[in-house]
Length: 152
Image 1: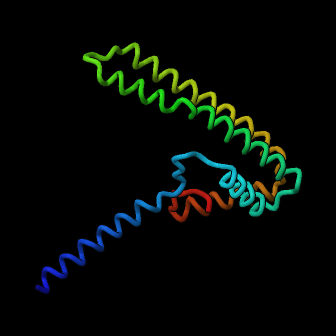
Image 2: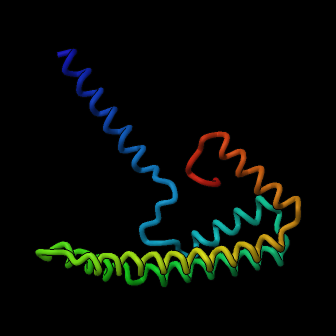
Image 3: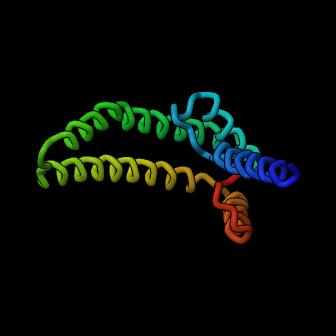
């Protein structure tokens, strides 16, 4: 009886541990970021960098533009998935169709990356050397601690 109890407790402990780790999936927002998440992120950044009102307004504008662009990019997500499902159900898959889908996706990702890069470069230009140093130090700190879940 004692051996059975130990096995049950061990199994349940392992299941709770795995479930707990899976539930702690940082940065996972299946529905996208809403206005509350966006405000929380911009407020956290503004607070940690001691941004001026002008810099905070710029940050909020840039974050809003990026979120808007991301929502537009993900708007046709369901139709793309259905296209893939239809493709998989076919007897044969045409390589040109697959290449076209990949090229389309890469073009959208590249467009988003260019957009974000432009906005981040513009925001970087508004930062003081002290604020840039705070960001650099924070990134170095996160790299040295081995944490892979971002800036918290």
